[in-house]
Length: 86
Image (cartoon, rainbow, N blue to C red):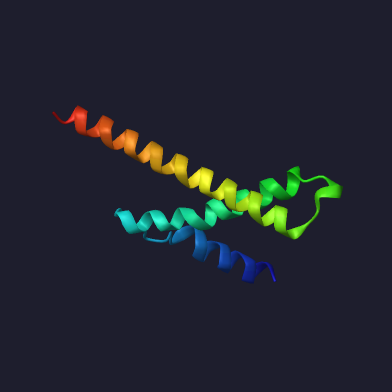
Protein backbone atom coordinates (compact mmCIF):
# COMPACT_ATOMS: atom_id res chain seq x y z
CA UNK A 1 0.00 0.00 0.00
CA UNK A 2 2.80 2.40 0.88
CA UNK A 3 4.61 1.47 -2.34
CA UNK A 4 1.50 2.34 -4.38
CA UNK A 5 1.11 5.70 -2.64
CA UNK A 6 4.81 6.46 -3.15
CA UNK A 7 4.56 5.61 -6.84
CA UNK A 8 1.52 7.84 -7.32
CA UNK A 9 3.11 10.75 -5.43
CA UNK A 10 6.37 10.37 -7.33
CA UNK A 11 4.50 10.45 -10.63
CA UNK A 12 2.68 13.60 -9.62
CA UNK A 13 5.61 15.42 -8.05
CA UNK A 14 8.36 14.49 -10.48
CA UNK A 15 6.48 15.20 -13.69
CA UNK A 16 4.61 18.48 -13.38
CA UNK A 17 1.93 19.29 -15.89
CA UNK A 18 3.16 21.35 -18.82
CA UNK A 19 0.86 24.36 -19.11
CA UNK A 20 1.74 26.73 -21.96
CA UNK A 21 1.98 30.45 -21.41
CA UNK A 22 -0.86 31.74 -23.55
CA UNK A 23 -4.26 33.27 -22.96
CA UNK A 24 -6.07 29.92 -23.07
CA UNK A 25 -3.93 28.57 -20.24
CA UNK A 26 -5.64 31.05 -17.91
CA UNK A 27 -8.67 28.77 -18.05
CA UNK A 28 -6.80 26.55 -15.58
CA UNK A 29 -7.59 29.21 -12.96
CA UNK A 30 -11.35 28.51 -13.19
CA UNK A 31 -11.40 25.23 -11.23
CA UNK A 32 -9.27 26.82 -8.52
CA UNK A 33 -11.57 29.85 -8.33
CA UNK A 34 -14.65 27.64 -8.13
CA UNK A 35 -13.08 25.45 -5.46
CA UNK A 36 -12.04 28.42 -3.35
CA UNK A 37 -15.50 29.99 -3.63
CA UNK A 38 -17.37 26.79 -2.72
CA UNK A 39 -15.18 26.05 0.31
CA UNK A 40 -15.22 29.67 1.51
CA UNK A 41 -19.01 29.96 1.26
CA UNK A 42 -19.53 26.55 2.87
CA UNK A 43 -17.41 27.58 5.84
CA UNK A 44 -19.04 31.00 6.21
CA UNK A 45 -22.67 29.84 6.03
CA UNK A 46 -24.59 29.59 9.26
CA UNK A 47 -26.82 26.63 10.05
CA UNK A 48 -30.06 28.48 9.28
CA UNK A 49 -28.77 29.58 5.85
CA UNK A 50 -28.17 26.06 4.59
CA UNK A 51 -30.27 26.33 1.44
CA UNK A 52 -29.11 25.38 -2.05
CA UNK A 53 -30.28 28.41 -4.06
CA UNK A 54 -28.63 31.14 -1.92
CA UNK A 55 -25.49 29.03 -1.68
CA UNK A 56 -25.23 28.72 -5.47
CA UNK A 57 -25.98 32.41 -6.01
CA UNK A 58 -23.41 33.58 -3.46
CA UNK A 59 -20.82 31.14 -4.77
CA UNK A 60 -21.37 32.31 -8.35
CA UNK A 61 -21.02 35.93 -7.22
CA UNK A 62 -17.79 35.12 -5.43
CA UNK A 63 -16.41 33.26 -8.47
CA UNK A 64 -17.26 36.25 -10.67
CA UNK A 65 -15.56 38.58 -8.19
CA UNK A 66 -12.39 36.48 -8.08
CA UNK A 67 -12.24 36.22 -11.88
CA UNK A 68 -12.93 39.96 -12.21
CA UNK A 69 -10.04 40.80 -9.92
CA UNK A 70 -7.77 38.36 -11.78
CA UNK A 71 -8.61 40.15 -15.03
CA UNK A 72 -8.04 43.54 -13.39
CA UNK A 73 -4.63 42.45 -12.10
CA UNK A 74 -3.71 41.06 -15.53
CA UNK A 75 -4.60 44.37 -17.20
CA UNK A 76 -2.63 46.38 -14.64
CA UNK A 77 0.39 44.11 -15.05
CA UNK A 78 0.11 44.37 -18.84
CA UNK A 79 0.10 48.16 -18.59
CA UNK A 80 3.11 48.16 -16.26
CA UNK A 81 5.00 45.77 -18.56
CA UNK A 82 4.23 47.85 -21.64
CA UNK A 83 5.41 51.02 -19.90
CA UNK A 84 8.59 49.31 -18.72
CA UNK A 85 9.54 48.26 -22.28
CA UNK A 86 9.32 51.78 -23.69
